[in-house]
Image 1 (cartoon, helix red, strand yellow):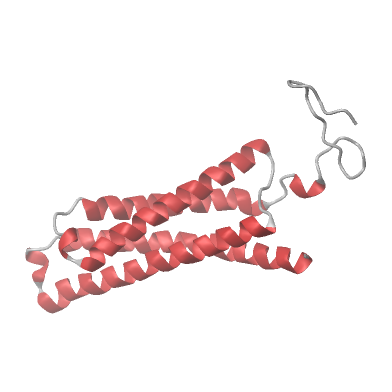
Image 2 (tube, rainbow, N blue to C red; image 1 turned 45 degrees about the vertical axis):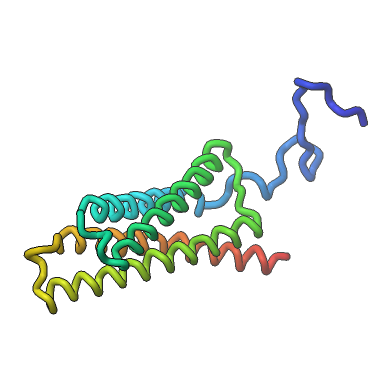
Length: 177
């Protein structure tokens, strides 16, 4: 077999020799479209939490709020990166969800989900401490803290369906091996 010259198109032979791409590569994954929607929601809620928290002057004085800003930043970057991957898969009508890729996505979802959830819980605890126990909302922007915490929880909540879908796909693909 002679290799193609530069600039010539190469036709990929499928399993039946009909010139079609392998069946496992054609887009049949409903999680890609749903995942794109959930990733964009995650990124939007994380960006909103980041923006609201960063708009206050007092967030840097409390370690938990700084942790929320860091976790929301990581969440936003991860969600946008995976959303770009999902959008590209939809555009080229190919699924890039191999067993290894799904495991990496599941681990990344687990890690960023744990970060954003723990940051939201810590921020909720500190906000409750400020508002209920200390009565310090007159000197602190408790409304902004509460809004940022709520956005962080919503970002985590939008992560759950994507995580469960990726985990289910990973287990299904590993069982096929």
